[in-house]
Length: 299
Image (cartoon, rainbow, N blue to C red; front, side):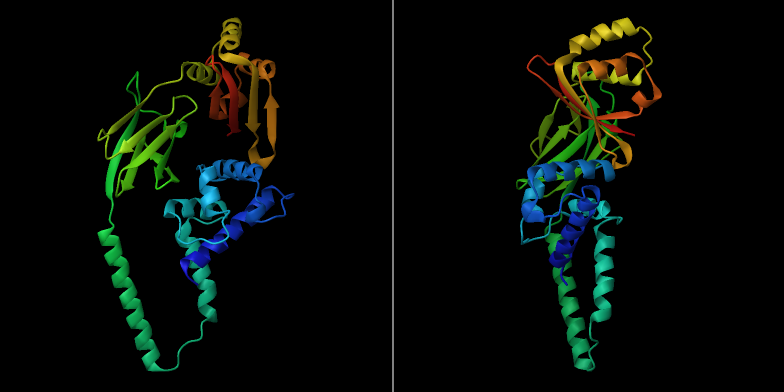
C-alpha cells in the first residue's frame, strides 16, 4: 500500500466521521453537496481548531482519484479530525495492518533485492528533499495602530500556492512560512480587515492589520464589564444592522442557536459569564459598515 492508497483510506474515514455528526448523510464524496462542505468546514473549526477551504475540499476530497498527495499540514488536520495525532500516526496505523499480511520471502536473493530497492528509494528521497529544500521566514502579526501583537486566536492565516490554500499556524503572534517560491499569504480576523501579502516580494518581518472599528467595539461589549447599559444599548443600535443574523454553535455538537438584532442586543446589554465564553469566529458588514452577520463558538 502506497501513500496515495493511505490517503484514500483517510478520505473514507473523514466521511465516516462526518456521518457520525450528520447521520442523515448517506452518500459519498461524489454526492457531497455545498452544504455538506460548509458543515465539514465548521466541524474542522470546532474539533481541530483549524481551517480548511471549500476549494481545497473540491480539489482533494471530492475527486475520485488523486494524482499526488496533498501538503502534510492538511493531512495532519484530517488525521486529527478522525482521531489521530497527525498524518504520521495514521500512516503507521495502516502499515501495521498491512505488514502481517505480507508473505515473507524464503530465499536470500529476495532479501538482497528488497534491501537494494529500499536503499535506492532512500537515496532518491533524500536527494529530492535536498534539491527541493525550502527557505523559512518568520513574520510577526501586529495591530497597525497600537503596534501591539495580535492575539493568535483572533487571526487565521492561509498560504495560497499553486492555487492551493493551506492553513498556517500562528504561535505567539508569529507565523512560520516555508516556501520555495513566492506565495500569497492571506490573513483574516473577525476584528481586523483582511490583508494579503506576497512572500518574496515583501521582505518585511511584520504584518500590520488594520482594526475594524465596529467589530472592536463589539469585542469590548462582549469581554468588558461595562455598567452603563443605556449607553451600551445606544451604541449597539449604531453598530448592528437592523437585519442582523447571529449564529451560535453550541458545545458538544448540540446544534446552532439563532438570534436577531433585538435578541442579541439583550444578551450584550447585561454582561454575563456565558457571554464572555463566546468566541467570535466570523463577522460580516454591510455597505454602511454595520455588522450584519456574526458566527460564534461556545467555549
